[in-house]
Length: 72
Figure 1 (cartoon, helix red, strand yellow):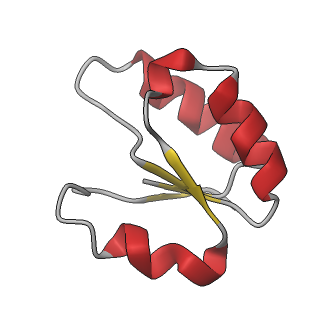
Figure 2: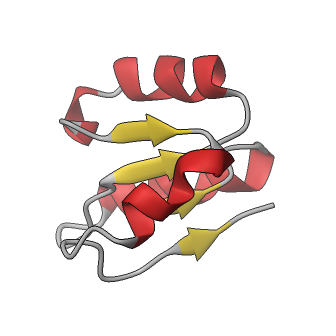
């Protein structure tokens, strides 16, 4: 799970994508359209869900989420 997809968030997301054991299940970003474009351009994100901050509880309550990275 990644909070924020600005400059730092994009760098961290791309680094996580290169890690063989990491998987990004959710991206929480105020600019949902930008985050959707990021996910669409990267098929390796699979079924990553983009959420606005107001819906972050959905991601935080998902039992599959083992870690959260905040990049803002």
